[in-house]
Length: 248
Image (cartoon, rainbow, N blue to C red):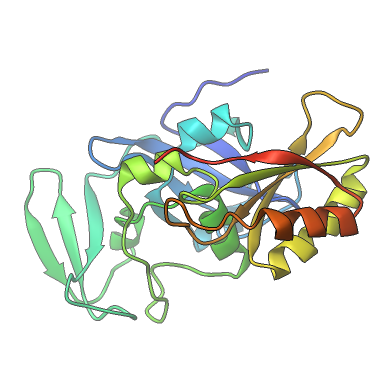
């Protein structure tokens, strides 16, 4: 059964070896799709539990594009069905762990805050992430609201949407005969600095595809590391089938 994306939709994000549960909160006029992230990776098909949300946080992620790309799907509905009335920013002069926050209300009013309350933690952080970045951070247990966790500078919404799977990075396509062989290849790509997304192939005699991207963004015209990907694909029994790179 296909579910449409609406505020309160529970999403299952593909994390290769499991999934991340998120709740779609709505669409911000400037930053786009806002989600609350369950802070752990769980087995596919698992129903969200209360403990999944205790350490949750909200940020901005292109959920609509993720669903179209087949790396996220709607699996249920939550009681949380409204975009919060304010957003959180780190104090602009800070680097590294925060010493203060700015609470920005929808009417433009700003309030300087030193310590976040439980209520403040429900507000989304002004941070835009793509799929590979979010999966890699959840995997390490990172939480952007922890006092000791550095947060990268927000990315422009158009850049995140254009680079859903890894900034401006090249996307390489590798096909495998079994899901097990594709699973076994993932550590080799990750140790070489790549992010991976696994999904069923649309056609062909190899039914499992790994979409491999650089975990960090590339500059336009930069090295797309095709030879590295080909070498790992051959070593792990995969068939390399080319790449796709964003224009610009």
